[in-house]
Length: 377
Image (tube, rainbow, N blue to C red):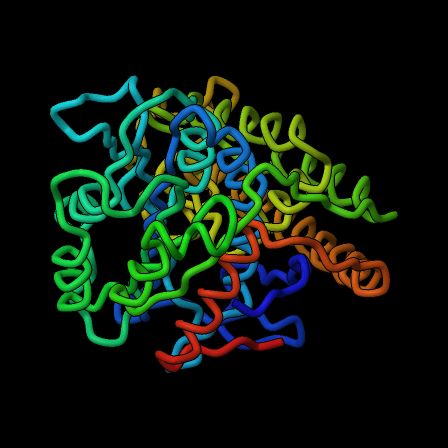
């Protein structure tokens, strides 16, 4: 498989624009907009700590890459990601040591929280069964032209278990789901243990990676600027409703998780939080008002944080619009700092060995391109 260089952190657009700007900002998305669905199936047996760490470090880079993608109607596609773990003794044997961690979701903080919560433990790794489970449980799109992809990563023979992977791959192909296989180990061993054959039948890509290799993010003079702006960005969120306070705390926790991994991961997350994919209208009143998902006239006072409960609808509207304006300005500052960061990275990038990040991004580009999606850079 052709190798690619480490990901350039992309230019992000702000939400709520109605036309394409110089920064590549997309117009509003409609229910008819194309959809990209990605299911990640990760082996969480004893030997896979490195794989899980790569997945944690890769999540925001993967999301950011999609900010460059346009579907055939030249709009930003909807993005949904699902997560499964398999091969873990802590899971139910009767379920094949398989667990759906997150169904298809656009809630990126929840996805991050669940990913950071994964723990490894020895177990039996049944590739055919976990693919079949994901095919049956997930709400795969039925619309022609939508991009549906599965990535399974592990290091045991692909044909373990009683579910024949050949049959499962045929079922996936019938439903237009592309299955990519990522072997954690030597390329030729992955071929001998049928991971390459799985990709062939799944009409996807076969890759062998060094799952114990740390993903290295190059430090730049713009990292601290973006991280500082992220802290200001967080101040523009207002938790409302039954889960508002909880979800706002969760946002901060995922910031800490990213920062504890590496500053570069936090930078990538901050860039994602300035994108159209990071929308929180289910708990953030600013997003909910912008997306017309809440009626301020009928909003109960106890649904608001204490400091806003004495505001009437008119005052609350003015407050939310001011916060939205402030958020847009901060996001634009992140865009500008990230442009300079990209230029710095382009001059200081080194080729690295194959990682989960590279395997995901190369397959996505190839398969999205074959379906009429295109990159605007």
